Every structure is written in structure tokens, then in C-alpha cells.
Length: 167
Ligand SMILES: Cc1ncc(COP(=O)(O)O)c(C=O)c1O
Image (cartoon, rainbow, N blue to C red; front, side, top):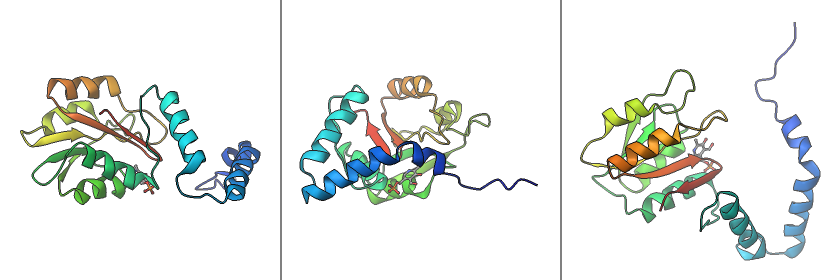
């Protein structure tokens, strides 16, 4: 019987091994580990790759989500729609700003948040929809953006490790 590994990152990592090791070496040799030229270059490249005007590099995905919600002025009394099957960090970001996460069930074909269920979860306290792009598949962003526009809501995409908001 063939053993199928539960996690098998080796093929993905070996494809970029040299590029990653050279990048680590460059940062290490610069003796500059916080902010600096490497972070600035990353921010410019990431913004241009995503065709957006700004990118801010932060330490991790949870900080990115937390800061995006803070930037949008989300706080106590506000509701944020999140997928019920996401990682805990999505909900922690919402609780860090004192808002309430509202769990919405996924589409059973993609396991990503189901736009039909989003509409039903919207109340007069809803401020943000936070779709999470899970299992390597993008959420149905056309449908989500159109629901957000219709209901005057902000969208913060959890694309951990890359997170962006539609400020
Ligand atoms: C869906 C999702 N959101 C947010 C995060 C948080 O990312 P980080 O561990 O970099 O804080 C993760 C981490 O696994 C995640 O899977």
C-alpha cells in the first residue's frame, strides 16, 4: 500500500530553494532586519503585482487583518462576516478590534464562503465582509464585491499570507 503524506511541501519548496536562500542571505548580510530597503522593495513589487496603489508589509497575517479592520474604523457594535470554516486568526482579528464575527457557511463545491449565505447574514450592524481564499481557490469575488457595493460594505480579503483591503 502506498503511504500518502498528510503534508508534502518538498516539491513546492525545492522549486524555489536557491531563490529563497539567496534572498535570505542578502537580508542577513545587510544586517537590517526591520523595515529598510528589502521591505520597501517588497511593498512596491506586491502593490504592482496586485495592481493597487499601496502595500504595507507587516509581521504576519493576523496583524495584516487586524490593521486592515482598524484602518476601516471597525469597532465595538460592528459585525464582520467571516467564513465558518476559516482559521482562528480571521476571527481573532475581528475580536481584537472589539467587533463581532458573524459565521457564514461555505459553498459545498469549493469550500469557500457562499455569496448567497452572505446576503442572508447582513444586518444594519454589518460593516465588512471578510472572504478567505481557502485551499488554493479564489472566492467568488465578483459576486462578493457586488453584494458589498449594493449594501455599502467594505471587503477585507484574507489571503494569508497576503492580506489586502479595498480602501
Ligand atoms: C486563513 C488564515 N488567516 C489568517 C492566518 C494568520 O496568518 P499568520 O499565522 O501569519 O498570523 C492564517 C494562518 O495560517 C490563515 O490560515
